[in-house]
Image (cartoon, rainbow, N blue to C red; front, side):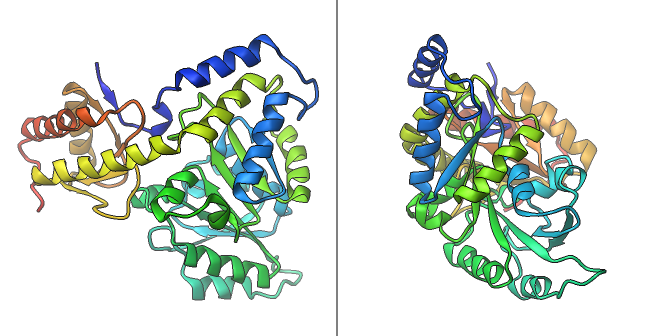
Length: 353
């Protein structure tokens, strides 16, 4: 049986989630878009947890991100984001194709925006030729940098710059609670600088599906309309929402175990002379720099799968591994051994110290 580390949404739900889903499915209630009891409880709990006025349930975090942009911008206005953010690279161009917004990408560092360039972008005076920046996007943890959390100070600085310019700040928080744990902060503290935060309920938290958008009452009211336009309303929502509530209430300890297992895996791979990281400050994502060209990387991934470990290519010569509830600490030696076997299969693979 393969160990599947291609994403942390592959973590299996807990028995408590399955039981909550079954109970909610057997007692469906709620015709309206926010009427189901489990959905109302989930949304209220998430809003309270993040210190915001309201929250709205979505089927996916991609839909929540897009609705957040639609609710805070108008077509033709500008959104600023890190060039390697998930919203720009992995959400099918929805900001432009559906939202009709101009996207200005800045070259960040591990997801942190260059503040001087951001200030310059926000300072542009709109006229008949140029539309204003209405929203800034951040992502924490930052997927492309190996699950690193953005420092609170940086999020606060970005939020202050955005507010001073009359713009909002949206945090793509697909792995928001991984950042909360890594930084040792309360969720409300990390969310405070943002006008909206999206939360994935299945990445790491192991709910079968679902996401949330959290923010002020007026933004969430607009997002409800946008959700309907996107065809992203779920009715009845009780079963999915019930599992999501269990996930929010119970799964933070699991995230810490994932972080611990990721650090153990980094150490195991480094002992085998693989360039694995991040070594410190990371969360549940491990990146392995292999220095391979695309054909060789494909062969390495095939050899890795043949040795019982599934991973994905993640940029030039790089492999990504996501730790989750389905990967126990006892599996770490097996994963490391699979990497060693794949390297043996590709005798041209260079070692890095």
